[in-house]
Image (cartoon, rainbow, N blue to C red):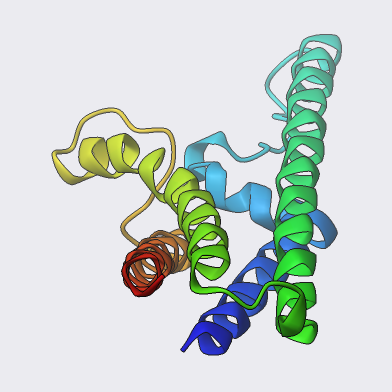
Length: 163
């Protein structure tokens, strides 16, 4: 089961790396509500006012996009670590070592899931929220991180008890 979990982790972290680092512009679309997406310059506003607002909005979008690359980079490190553990199992053969690694990966998934919980709660009760969690790709990410968090932590505990 250990190798199956490592395989799932590396697929998940690898997809997150690609999505957040390579396709950061698309990933940014997840975090922006429809009304927050870059607007076209209105013909009714003076050109310099619209131009300044557009430059400011574009600068914010660039910062957000680049911040997502950082998230992707962290996912790459977790992906690589899973690949190495999968490829060289003899380096860390004991149950307690496997338990520690699975716990760390579970915490990594938990950190992605837990910080979305308040946002999901606010969206659920129709309060102000930062981005949509209950639909589309973000829902897939929310459920995926929750599932992998549970899987990693559960088997971490089971391996710890086997020690």
